[in-house]
Image 1 (cartoon, rainbow, N blue to C red):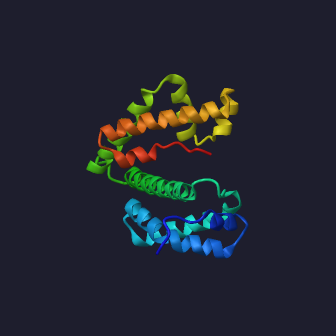
Image 2: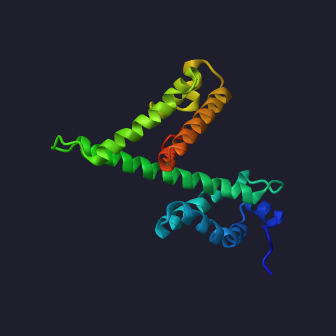
Image 3: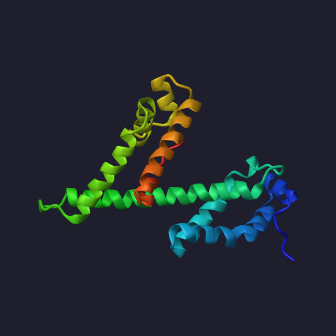
Length: 195
């Protein structure tokens, strides 16, 4: 009979570089994590890639795994971040490609897609403009200028903890606003870069 969870001894062995423990964990979780990824990307090839990325990352982080914590929660947190990164990059690429396509188009006619793209951008800007001033500045520095938490912290003379907290609050506000307008995927584009 299959156990409900991986034993702490296996997790401890993984942290001590055991390839056998890694294989045990892989076979125990591969199906569940694969179906988790399928829900996100709706593409079997991409789900396979994300599955591989998950276990590569697990192996890279093996020494930081603790046997006295919830290993499954640890593993699925990594999986969630990989899935969100995939959705963010996919959606950004699609929007940028669409924007570039019409920006470079030789015809001056405004198309339906072009109008939609600008409506989405305007909707996002409304949500960002409604943020409190300091939070808005931090959010724009991160999202629009691509500055890291450390860079924003240094520029604004704030603690990294404060910057990260403000980014998380801003991101939540923007996502809720866009979700209320039915733009769930667009909401994923405006998750800040937490690095």
